[in-house]
Image (tube, rainbow, N blue to C red; front, side):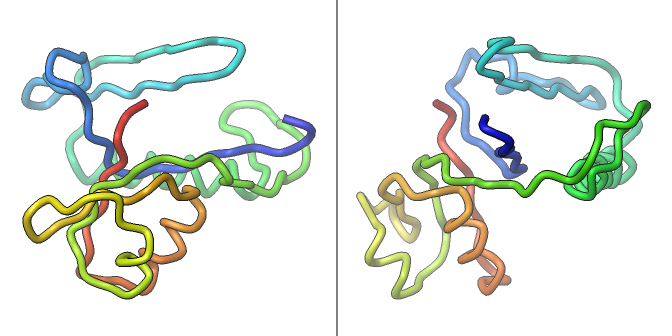
Length: 135
């Protein structure tokens, strides 16, 4: 949008009955939601936990550096992750207390915070776990 891109990867909680909630054994499913394309999901047998995770992260690095997957895409575009969402967070912290909407046992549900703010906070929280709520 206006020369900006919003791209992020994190665990996401989904409703029971959604395709992402029932991926069997050694299969993978990735869902992309685009403003022009709508929701697109890709499902198939995977290469295994570690090869898949490595390649997803490598693809994100390549995109952030302006490298195309199979064809050149042009120069690098700065990611602007201003999109806000609520997160399930298993951790304790002053910033988290200020951004808590409700408590779930030892964990909290945040108010709507930007993806960038959540990921920046997470960098300094090695024992924390987050999962976004699917929209």
